[in-house]
Amino acid sequence: MCGGIAAYKAVEVCRRLVDAGAHVAPVMTPAATRFVGPLTLSALASEPARHSLWESATDPIPHTRLGQAADLVVVAPATARLLGAYAAGISDSLLTATLLATRAPVLVCPAMHTEMWEHPAVQDNLATLRRRGVALVQPATGRLAGGDSGAGRLAEPADIVAAAIALLDERGARPLVGRRVLVTAGGTREPIDPVRYLGNRSSGKQGHALADVAADRGADVILVTTTERDGPPGAEVVRVDTAAEMADAVLSRLEVADVVIMAAAVADFRPAQVAGGKLKKEAGIPEVVLEPTLDILAEVGRRRRGSQVVVGFAAETAAGEALRAAAEDKLRRKGLDLVVANDVSAPAVGFGHDTNAVLILSADEPALEVPLSDKRVVAGAVLDLVASRLSRHDPAVARTAVAHTAVAHTAVAHTAEEERP
Image (tube, rainbow, N blue to C red; front, top):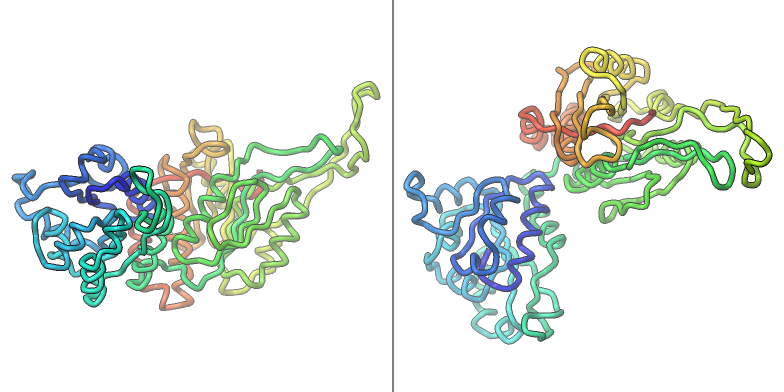
């Protein structure tokens, strides 16, 4: 991060990179600390922010360590001063020293006033850097500091992160590139009359986290959801309400999916008759007769192709061995590759929460416990195991799945919002 008013956007870039699964080591120029405090980045990143070559007696050559460890260096915002120093090979800060000490790809994201951006010296420095292989995220046109408007505005954080992920993908960092992943999310609503319905407490947060992380890892995502939340950019989003609608959406797309993750909470029963008008209490207590819905997960298991990976969820109100037994039973009965089980009666776990704690079982691998964590972390752990299974059919995936799977087995947790409550 360099010292410019656009430094506030770099905080969001940091957060998004961490959410996408990156280990982020922030490096600030001294001027950057005038715009954003190091503590802000330290709180969001994977390790404390650094801003001096001289601040640690235990790490006398921090630029070398940082440069050698990096898979990618993202400079956002990149000021005119930084571009000039980098092009000239001048090491006058921890950041420029790190840039000169790394052999990793470098992505610069310029931000400055229009007059500076268009200056021939700045453009010459950029041309020099690009000849050397430095990647560039072009600045946008829009509002600048001081009430001005024009070219030179820092690109949006989402665009910067997308460019970073694309560069990492060239180094094999996204194991789901070329794969189509179908995810279900949310709880179904089974109508009693035009006003009332039978439903459940699922928020869809875990399913949406799975869709987002799958997209971050390169997958083409199909998201079948009962919520109004946005899907990841580029995803096919299918909005449904009932179990029957979800069954139609899933089964009609089953053939094109490499992975099916049934994270939605689908009703087991629905009213056999739906009243045409609102039921009035003056008419007395109505008799609601229920009938079973289609077991979508079991049907997916029955129709699956040999190479497809199928993941089910099991939301239980049990812990320990009882939770494991219920998950093992579901895994076996429904012909799944993986089942993600959780105790939704535990604090901060499951429906409606941003966190989850799950037990992931498969028929042929050791169980994985993910302790209480953000639901994106749980999603990452599930998708690590999915990539590992895909690699058995495709050696190209195997080369990129190993690192992700190793991370998944170190810790971290999530929440499972069941496919069937």
